[in-house]
Image (cartoon, rainbow, N blue to C red; front, side, top):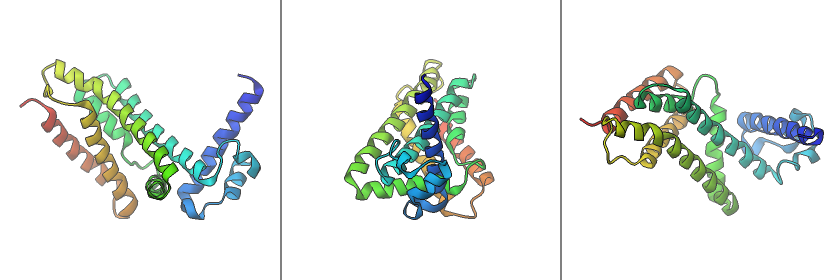
Length: 207
């Protein structure tokens, strides 16, 4: 990698990190490109090396968040050397809200969906990103599901993509509670997730 390429990647990383922090703390409407530039220690013009507009930069930040969640789930499955259900438990636990992240970090995802409903171009990009995320999760989930079916533990009629959608819906529900209910705690999130996983295990395991 040439020094010029490294410098561009360094600036891009700094800009995306700064944008994520600004959008998480202030929301889309109250975030200004000038503030992101100051936080990233670059000129406002340099932002356009990464994004063509504020909404483009916002999408890139949210897409990066989606990719990070997916990568955590994939890593959990890949690195968890145990029975199939333990792999699924690890994957779900990897993407639920945790003490490591503030509510604003999840709130920006809901802002993205709201903006996508009003902006046709953004809507297409968000749909593509969600399709890629759900598709990637389905691929990750498929292996422990197949292993469980082959071992005679899971129902043979299971469709990995549908299991992935079910898990994704649960994660979405938890994110919403984490953002909208101040009394929600990480302890409660963990307890509710374990209940969900117990129910999931009963639903997909051969009786």
